Amino acid sequence: MHRRRRLKGKNQSTLLYNSPVSFWYRSFLPLLLWSAVAVAQTGGKTPISYKLLSIRVKGLQHFTETQVVSASGLRLGQFAGEEEFKQAAQKLGETGLFTQLNYSYKYSTQGCDLELQVAENNHLVPIIFDNFVWFSDDELLRMLRDRVPLFDGRVPGGGHLTDQIADALGTILAERKIGGRVEYMASGPLNGSIESYDYKLSMHAIIIRNMDFPGATDPEAPLLQAAAKPLSGQDYLRTKMRVQEKFNFLPVYQARGFLKAQFAEAQAKVAEDGVQTLVDVSFPVNPGVKYKLTEIKFSGNRVFPAEKLRERIPLKNGEPANSVELTEDLQQIHKLYGTKGYLFAHVDAVPTMDDTAATVAYQLNVTEDEMYRMGELNIDGIPPENAKKMLAQWQMKKGDPYDSSYPQRFFSLMYRDFGLHGSYDIVPKEAIDRQQKVVNMALHFVPKS
Image (cartoon, rainbow, N blue to C red; front, top):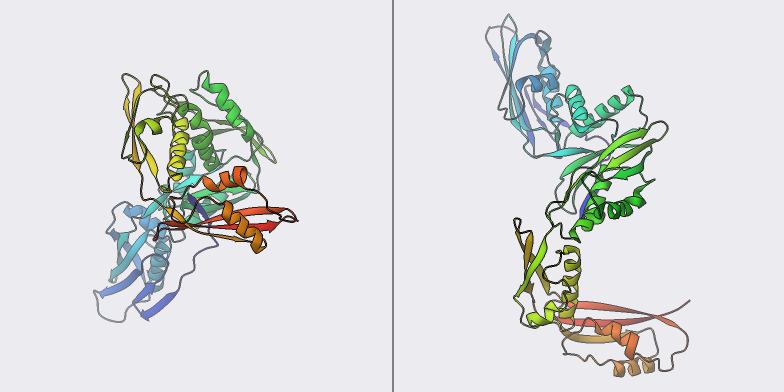
């Protein structure tokens, strides 16, 4: 599962001055240390500003010295002093691209030589252009590098570089007279780390008109068109297209034995432009080899023999390997184990593919886990005498292996209403005690309004 988090405004920082020549910078990155050392080569009072004769940057691994100097705002020949050096260091630190930055300088009657010592932040993630359909990715990256000196296609999880990218994208769109507002969001697994920053243009409708599938042939092409039909008239977002490829388009191939089918990045081409933009979207596909099934073997199963489990998989040897159907069949095996109390049993399918022969054999590894038994049965919402009669009907007794299919069968086949007045909705709730290995069942009767 993935999360998407909206970033709220720009990050604020506080400068705490400890001495005339050093300070600490705080951000939500690891603490970033600045320090400054001035070395006088002549006697007398330290001047307020100096002519910058040279700027050197030490500790670089990825960036160039020219990039860092440009991003600092300093330039050779200008007159600068302690305050300008601090501002330059702060400007670099606020990008989030450095975890440590020190500076020192030497001055004489001719001017000043400045040295920056840095440690780069290696935890950078890519950015995604979600709906900037007027440009290719390469064009946008090139234009952003021209406007944001330290940008190389990746950004840190903290700092102001993400805001600078948004501002630069806004300027690029304004130059093309494209209205709207640039927004960005962090994307990654739920409760996990950020994997990318997704930028999109809002307040400007970008609508899908037509879809095509370069590389697709019959009989899959019409099936893909049918699966894509609901997209027509919807907003275009690249991240949305990726979801479609994974869950709607790829199964068309996987159900027909194309187990290694791959979709390239969806490409949107502007068809009509104006107050709203219409785009035609291409989903390039490489079907790959069509595999046939040769064998299915089970391991790890003790409760059910392999023959019993194989009955749950209709797929026959020699047929195209339908991995979509196989996934559904494995769920049926999971349910079968649930009827014997093995609620957490699962099966992992490990394919062995022979590309030359276009065949696949599956090893199905069964993990049965532990058996769960019936615990307490509680009934509420109805008079006690009716609840007592129902308890007598309930045939899965305390201590019996828990049958996960029994509650549904009970109410569809065995349940009889003994004198209840009025109509009720019945809400069953299972409470699994993993320590005691029991399932306590509660049946809540709710009067229908």
